[in-house]
Amino acid sequence: MGVWIEDLADEDHDLKVNWWNWRVILRIIEAMGLIDNERIEMMGYNFTGVKVSKEESRQIAAHLRDRLSNMNPGERILWDLSKTSEPDSGVFHEDPSDDYSALYHVLKDFSEFLDECDGFTVS
Image (tube, rainbow, N blue to C red; front, side):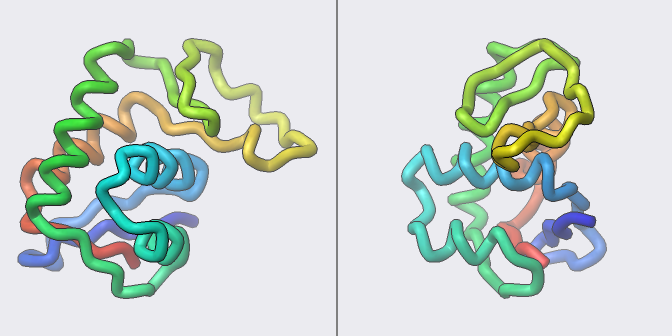
């Protein structure tokens, strides 16, 4: 399960992101201060109709590229926004936030999608 990220101008241009990655991606976007808290919160649910503009998408993509430039394939960003090269153990923790992480390749795919889209919506 996860979310579909759909291009506002082309419904056939989309990207699926699982919840484990998406929750951390939302924390990264939230930390940028670009998108208001209400939209961030709504982007954490399916079928909300929240729209992110082309300009906002490009700013998020640039931020992710910057983060990726300090990462290596196989690394991931954790809930607290630190990075690690330790693989996910697959063990569920008492605090569910310890289970979420955004993998390098997912961040790369998402940033590339954002560079190509005309804004996006989450469904």
